[in-house]
Length: 308
Picture (spheres, rainbow, N blue to C red):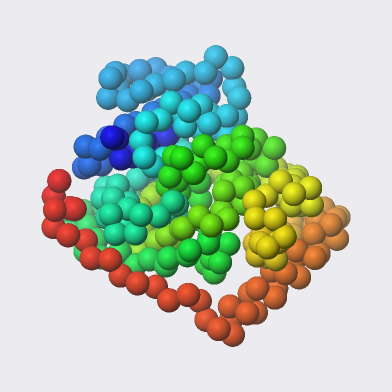
């Protein structure tokens, strides 16, 4: 069986898409498939993608449906044990799948959250000598117990069967904050590994980054609040505090961003609606500060992991 299904989605990313696809093709493991869904680009992205021929499985949507729908489309076609998501403006580091494979062998998690390498401009140069010899991780039996940053959509690996159990998959209602929404639908009793080192994904910072667009992010946060109040998220009452602490932390961080951007009314409205969750987040953070974060452990990379 195919180990990894790499899912790349793009929309009008002619400038970046070659970096993304090339970075997937050079991954050393043979147990992979690459599915690229173009979301009705009009800038020539599809022409670039067709040049790859049979090296990738290309799906070109006829109408623009959004990143969430494009990812769901690819996931429905995937045959791999694990889904590896990559946005079309990001790229893998050369050892990404080697690291994921080693973690799967050692820990058999349902989800892996990786660390990203933010950059602007040209893709950073990585040398063979930079290949990692060990992996530093934190293991959580329940993802909601996480005590560190969540990461980006391009730094997530999810067991395919676990993903299929999430009703609706990626939800367009919470875009562009959709990655945390997915985790809240998935997370209960899902064993997760957070990679502290090495970084496995290049995260490109550019003017088109949706996560930097407060006008889009704030309505998505209100949708999180609505979903939590209506019982959309997994775990029921038993996981309510941890869920709300996670949501509250993101509400507080984005409300600060909004205040700094002069969106005082929008920030105040968000805090008023979400204050119980913000309080849960403060309590959770204080508890972690007192007890300390969960300790990390090290997995050695084997020679065969880096020479396949």
